[in-house]
Length: 124
Image 1: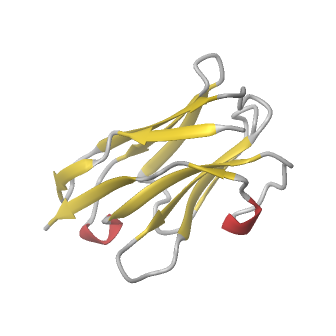
Image 2: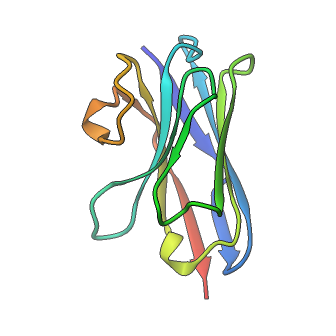
């Protein structure tokens, strides 16, 4: 089992920045591809970004490309999401997830472990 705990969410004005962290425990995530997803109120969960197990490959949703940056520190068993130039439409609960197979996919169905989420609210 892998336990994932997100932190770093909060309320920020449009144009501001936040850095989310996803700390893993129970098992090393160094062999897993990791992803960030988000779910706005009344909407389906959507893919935001994924990073390969080594950190060498990153794939962003078009809506966040150029504004968000994913990174990982396998020594700390942690994945990060730096979010800059935030927009009101970025408001959502953000989840990190582990793809343990690994599948290298943006489909949330293929992610095996999920955190509880952290709320990000961007005011206009």
